[in-house]
Length: 255
Image (cartoon, rainbow, N blue to C red; front, side, top):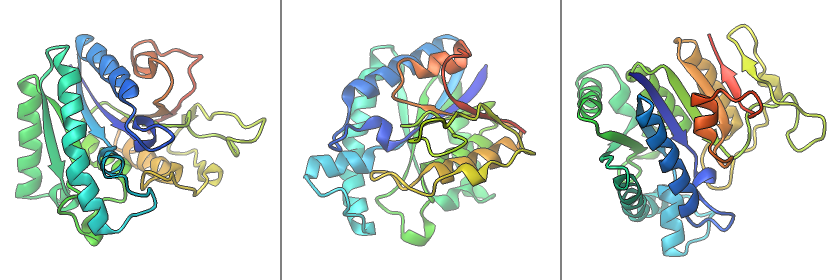
């Protein structure tokens, strides 16, 4: 079976007001179920717990101290996982939560235990849903963002493809907001396009295109195919994985 990691960013899972977009989550679940039916082993790295917690507690989006993130995460994680459980249950897919921290990816017993657990989940037909354990993480031990986490999971689990879903179509050769800017369809190890990357970050996530670019380049060098695409486009996963639709914009990173 082909093994794939799908990372979904906060801006894909939330509406403009910061609340959880249940319709979008449902659509992604439908697509992941389709990939599983097509023979893919899927690991889902999901953002959205902190944003979901903010929405439930009615807090301002700019509040971002470690303690506040811990509270938001503890509240939002319950809601997010309950939603995934309910939606995947419609396809008779059992999900399991994996809350991890950066030190778990250092070679040693924690690394081996985490990998062994996720291998056992996949062997049992369980879909692992991975997120950082924000509730207990401290600043110096936090992942840069879930882009970094998805890259670490991909290399640990020896996947064939990492898909990073954002709210933009991929890497552009200029400012995406300016007319004339075009999607860069393929970036290889010898083709550094970091000069095209804007340093701006989203308001709800810790990452940005700069983070996605560097993670994608690094993961691709280990032989894993990486795709950056717009998670808000209809049926995006099936179009770029199952159909390889040439009219669907995305950026592919290869070794």
